Amino acid sequence: MSASYKATGINLKGVPMGENDRLLTVLTAEYGLIRAIAPGSRKHESSLRGRSGVFVVNHLLLIKGKSLDKIIQAESIASYPGLSQDLGKLTAAQYLAELVLYQAMGDQPQSVLFGLIQAYLSALEGAQADGVLPLLVEGMVTLLRLAGVAPEVNLCAVTRQPLRQTRTDGWQVGFHPSAGGVVSLAAFEQICDRERRFRGSSGDPSFPNDPAIPHNGERFGGGERFGSGAIAPSALSAGGNPPLSRRVRQSTAPYRAAPPVAGTRLTAAEWQLLRQVATRDAMAAKNTTLPTDFSYAQGSYAQGSYAQGDCAPDTYAQETWLAVERSLRYYAQYHFERLIQSASLIDACFAPLPSTLLPPA
Image (tube, rainbow, N blue to C red; front, side, top):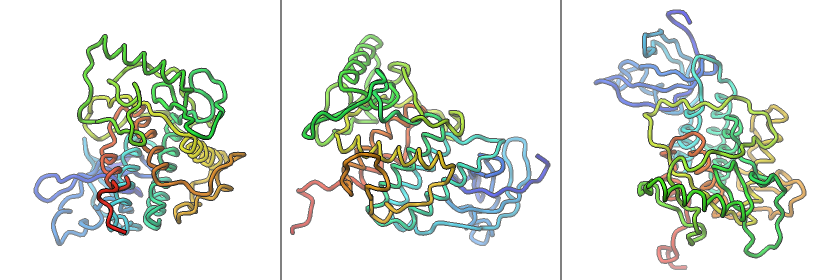
């Protein structure tokens, strides 16, 4: 790059720097992830003040620096003000932005990631309340596939045998990050036993800052919380789709200890939903199209838009989407080796209120 260069980028992160400046982390289509100073952008009269906000898309003119670049001119071309008016939408947008930051690369084009984050931000801004969580879940699946670590959802990731639902009441399947996706309950228990033994022999303490989230109000044996680095992944699958980029552990955030490995159990409805979202994402990847059809953002989860041979209900309860998000959250944290900070607000935004807190009918 020359001393000055032009780029089109979206601000994914901003922190104060000095008295009047702001340090931005910008995803550009041309050069990938860059860190640049927006001089004087915290002053009220600065022309960069509004253009340095998070989720603002700009045409930029920058000067190359030794360690940090400097923005000398910015022209806004898009923003998403509706996100800041709804805590759930803003949390979901920040959640997806973290995943983008964890896999984005610098010094090379990132046009696919750039297009994806804009598409999801636009869909989130216009979504109804019950469409935000579905958008987040599909965004997670899409970004995991793009990073080359999409979970296996159809076969047991350990035995590579098809998983079949044997009954409708109480049937469950395991989902474990270290195995690479869904596993049979027998394989799930074996993984949990190995991790319990590993934790006991290494003296690895539990992680009080990341408490286990009960599944449907119950704690399940061995799968709720584990120490870091329990076992190496035995199988990783991209769901049959070639990854669009190699796995990258690059982040502008300071390094944190690896998050705990958390396995979960999925009910029949939760597993079916995960399969349907992954199938839809795989079809979009095969057609090399960006996910611009967000019909479910309007609260419509049509069976015909997802399933292939599944007898699924036309809609899923929000609790089902939330359970799938939790499983994918642990999976993403394990493979990106970073905690998703925005995830701490997901339960506050979307978890149903206890019956004792509900207003009288």
